[in-house]
Image (tube, rainbow, N blue to C red; front, side, top):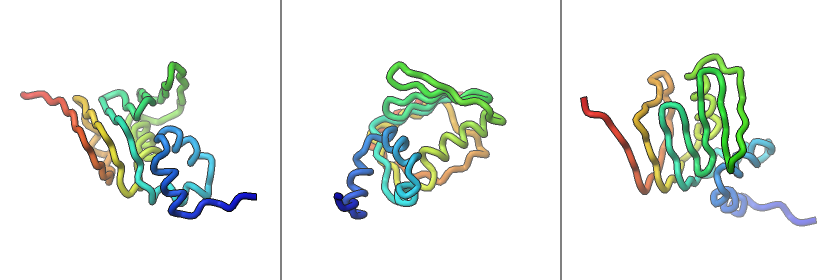
Amino acid sequence: MPLPLSYPGLKCVLENLEAVKRAHIIGRSPGLQKVDKLIPLCLKDFSIYSNQMEINNLRIYYGRDEVEFEMNGKAFSRKGFASRQDTIKKVFNFYFCERSTIHVDKVDWGESSLPDALALDIKFRVNILISSFRRQ
């Protein structure tokens, strides 16, 4: 029987694992959930707009009472959220909250802003930032 990975080995594997696959694996392992928040998350692309968010190749559409996930041409949705703000908050909490740092190669911050009530303490380390804004 092989020996389990030590913390440095596990950290190296999880840090370099693709973000969507990492969330899929971590969501099913209570032992890894304890360690996961300490290990930085590495993303290739992160885009956020008023009605959707894109993490690498996972596109998340959030509506008033449902969230639709689309990846590689396959889509599924979840319903039953109280409000749009509640939906956005739950999606952000699942992917980003309580992380030490999130390393992102490219961030595209669209013409949207998150609701003021959604105060998140998130640290991004970004290589490229794309931001569109409107002049009034």
